[in-house]
Image (cartoon, rainbow, N blue to C red):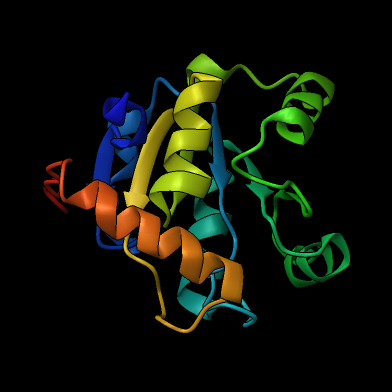
Length: 165
C-alpha cells in the first residue's frame, strides 16, 4: 500500500530533471502551485523557458487543484493546456480530461511536489511519477494538511533523489 505513494523519480525541481532520459514518453503533466510556481505566484522566467523547450518534444498539461480561472489565466502564455479544480487525489476529473485529450497514461510523466495529491494520484492513473521539492513553504491551508500526512509517509518510505544533470 505505501508503495503507491512512492515516486518513480525524485528531483530538486523541474529545472534539475534531464528530460532527455524520458524520450519514449509523449506527454508531461505538471502540478501547478509549488511545482511550476510558488503558491499563488506566477511562473518564473526560467521555468517558462523550460516549458517552451519541452513543448518541442512533449505534449504538455497542467492538472491543478487551484481555481480553473486562475490557473488558465496564469498559463495562457505557455504552450500547454491548463486544467484547474482537478480535486486531486480524486481521479474523476482527471479521467475525464485524459479521455477527452486522448492522453496515454503509460506514455505520460506526472511532475508534482506532493506525495498524496500528485504522486499517489498519478501512480493510480498509471503514469510515471516524478516528485520535486516544493518551491516555497507557504501554501494553501489544506495543502498543509497533506504535508503533515506526507511527513508521516516519509517515515516509512525511503526517498532517494535521482542524479541531476
